[in-house]
Amino acid sequence: MSMRVGFGYDSHRLVEGRPLMLGGIDVPHHLGSLGHSDADVLLHALCDALLGALALGDIGSHFPDTDPAYKGADSRKLLAAVVKLINDKGWNVGNVDCTVVLERPKLRPHIDGMRTVIAELLGVALDAVSVKATTNEKMGFAGREEGVCAYAVALLERE
Image (cartoon, rainbow, N blue to C red; front, side):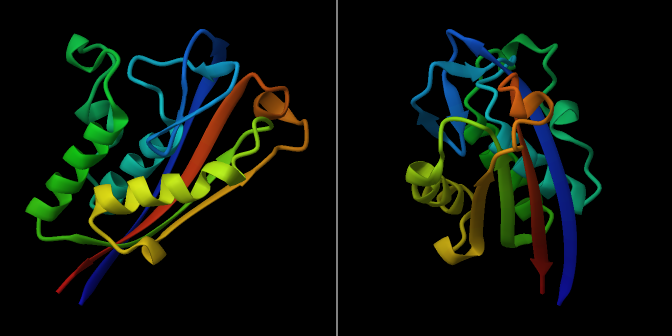
């Protein structure tokens, strides 16, 4: 069996008047992520991890923010397209581990929903998807509630 590991990171500014999309879930909050698409940092970091595992570039090279076709795009569709790409190349997702960094709101009530959405999109069992959340202890842009970021690691497997 062959295996590949990829790492992804994404960040977006938090602003009023936008939804806070995380892991394919609309998380109730007075601030949301600013971006060309729906700005779901968790799914974007996951796309980058999957693409990185096969040295296929990053999310911006596949879905550029200069392309009007991706204005307001649903990141679940972007992740599904990335999964199709890696599957077409003969690879499957083994497991993923993700962390969201955000001061508020607390994400614990939403983690199971995020894991369910991600597992369905990846075509894996729920126990192959880890989503964690942490604060930045009031330090940096995340700590000042100016933005949100996410990290992701993905293991791809091929027989």
